[in-house]
Image (cartoon, rainbow, N blue to C red; front, side, top):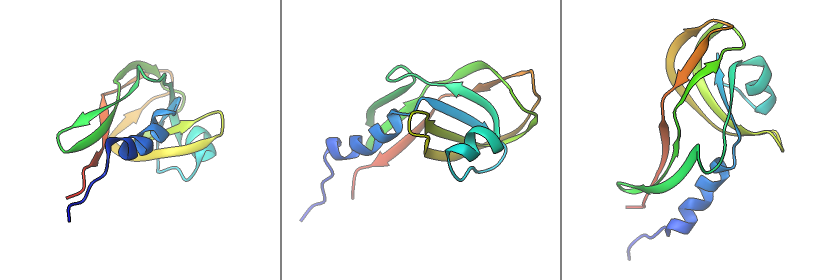
Length: 123
């Protein structure tokens, strides 16, 4: 018997992330929305769906691509180590990942390249 995960099932998980309207560049791994938006935050970036969070086929499943952002204002000085996605209306932290460490200085700007979250089809 084969394994099947319909696109609708995978998309439901990706749509949870797609609802996010904030991306935080953080100096450490945040534990919740308040931590991401205040304690660990170096830069806060506003996202819009579907322009900044697009769901599509991937080579072996489905993916959500988070659009590149450039020239975003740096609010606090520190070493960026994590990127977090959250939804401000319910203050939920919905995804956290690492990033290449980069020193950011308050008042400057930061560029975040496009990146994706993939969910593979079952094998």
